[in-house]
Structure formats: C-alpha cells, structure tokens
Length: 179
Image (tube, rainbow, N blue to C red; front, side):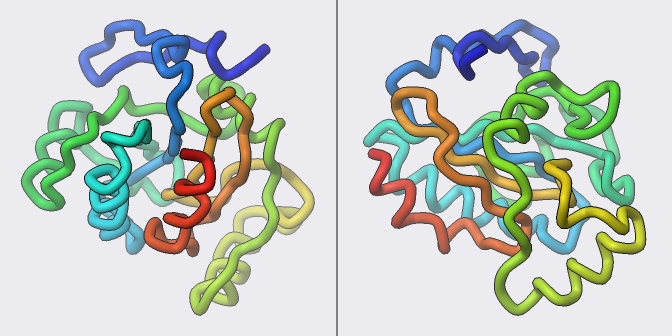
C-alpha cells in the first residue's frame, strides 16, 4: 500500500482520504495537549504559516497512549490548540499509534521509517524514560512518545522520521528540500 491508499477520520468522525493530499508535502505528527513537548505546537504552526502556501500540510493526530497526556475529546483538543497555540491546521480524530488498535496509517509510517534514536539535549532523558517501558525500544519501530513526526514528500514517500526531541524548527530545511 501507498500513503494515498489510507483513509483517516477528521475530528468530527468523517472519512478523509489521503489521496486528497497527492502532490503535497506532509508532516504527520502524533500529538498531546498535556505533554512536555506540547509547546512544539507553536513551532508546527510556524512551519505551517511559512510553507502551507508552497504545498505543506500538517496532519495532527492526537494520541493518549503516552502518559495519558491527551485528555479530553476531539473538540476539546481542537479548542485547546486554537486557543493556546493559535493553530490553523486541523486536528484529526484521537488515535492510537502502537498496538493492536494502532491507526493503520501509523503502522505504515513505522514500516517505512523505524526508530533512529533521540537527538539533542533531551536525548539522554528520553532514552532513560522510554527504557522504563520498553527495554528493547532502540530495536523496534514503535512510536516512543508524543510529537513523533514523519515527513512525506510530494510523491508520497516517507522521507524521514523525527522523534519528539527534534523541534519543528529543526526540520525546516528538510521540508524546504521536499517543496
């Protein structure tokens, strides 16, 4: 399957075919509203403002699998993002990214780009934190935490995976290269 073969649900429960995104660069993110990485919404919005007119779409999938840090229903999450971070990209329906109930889109994304390691000043902390839940985390493709980001080019290829420790502004150059 290709990325454009997947259908997801918007926050109101309506089907959205990713075939509508053909020809666009996608940044697909699992998010949470009560996480230490939640301020990344600000950086995501800056990327969206900077590159949306050039063909970038941000697909925001709230996920409550990591420390129950995405409380509330889909509409409450949407309201929080708009009020606190002034997001103009939309949120999709809350999902799971790992396990038997994982959204098939995320199963596909993980099959295309596995875990390559945490980076930056928070890497050591995240390595220790995630190891508490998954001793073998470095050797599997599972999503490790909130704000894992997948960059997809205009042809639907999953170009790169960025872990939660990579701030949105750090990937601007990679987005530009895809645009």
